[in-house]
Image 1 (spheres, rainbow, N blue to C red):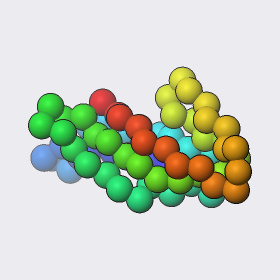
Image 2 (tube, helix red, strand yellow):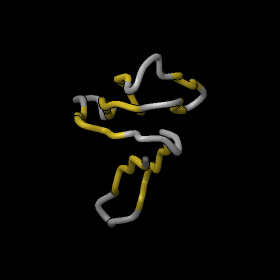
Image 3 (cartoon, one colour):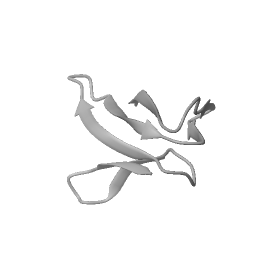
Length: 68
């Protein structure tokens, strides 16, 4: 998955990559008043979120992450 903050000039100002080769899906995205981006969804297998690796404990597990 790619999460990208677009600058007014339509250039990627803050590209962020998360996820794995498995079945990952972001279901909800929100932005806070301070500019942080929150994402929530589900994954299977393992999923990389920055320096943290989540390992699924079942068919699909959920995640909530703050980016920014």
